[in-house]
Image (cartoon, rainbow, N blue to C red; front, side, top):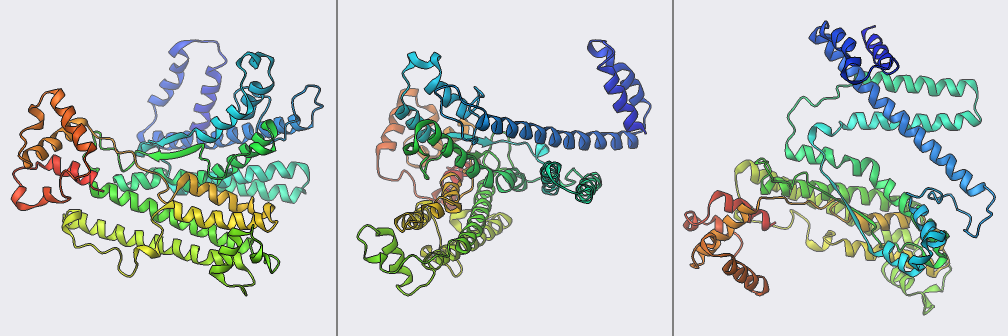
Length: 497
């Protein structure tokens, strides 16, 4: 087997003691004798082998971290440091809990005089924004992501099977793992069609849909527990705090990519809105199934039960499952939001195909939908969910309020209704050209010929003015065709989104 022969040579090269590129010479000589077809097979084999090996190594790392967490929470505590709860690592200096432990209890940090309030303020006000910038060649196909996810799930099941399982159960897991690996080998890992900016963005945001959508609230739950452990029960993470947010360049980055047009960016934004609304609708319907209780009658007369009275006012005093009845219109509105975004997406795609600018089309909000029927602001959705959370707390159901509902609230806080905002990167020369066309259109001369002081003064005046500098779409009117260049029109279309 040529794959195994080459793998054996690679392993041997690391043990012979030869340094530099000389140890690679036997492998280079071996590979030089192979045909192009054989090289393709070997390259695929090693690519899949390394992918599966990475999955196994990641799983092993997670398994060791779990064991470390278990030891932390069970070892005898001989210091004045509170016993770790096993949510995040307290003994690792580069972990969240480890940093908190050092700041609060390490003798080395005494001179810094960091108080609990200062730490709490930092954790609840700072935000780290992670920007997705993956090149299309670095984005795995959805089918491979799903297969690798199943491999991880099988490895997790195998860990549990080590503790208590029969030989048959272990055999079932072995067979399932073999099937997944065989299926991975038979799957084409390369997209055979050149990706468009839209498909690149869709595949790039798969990591949010398949991983971050559930992992982020899980981590924030652990962070909340760790803050309470290290700082005190009154120092939990607020539900609306957003320590992490995400953004993307894909579909917005114009730096050297002429294929990213204003309509392309509109399509990507609307596609993200569709996906966010669908994910949130699914979560809300799951909440409807889990929050099915009926608080004691008469609670609406309690002056402190403000949120509960608000819910009863909407669903009526006789509703047996008030929270389910309250959340049903929320789920329906999210469904309509997804439908509205799909309608808008079709319009933009039609404009792109017809070569029509956004402002040149007679525009309705929706075929059958009005602005009141959809969510356009995440604050509106957040208010609905927080009302349910507050009402559950008012009626003595804090344990329910801080379950799945808290996770959904944190998702809305982090991802909003747009899933990820797009960072629009564009060369400043294009902006200067657009401003030059505007000043000529207004009869003020050439912006590009002004000195730096004149430019700054004029821009400052316009930013302070409440009057619009130019009406949307003036750059597309036939009588202005000589004043606005194609580059300026493209730039102004981008900013008019």
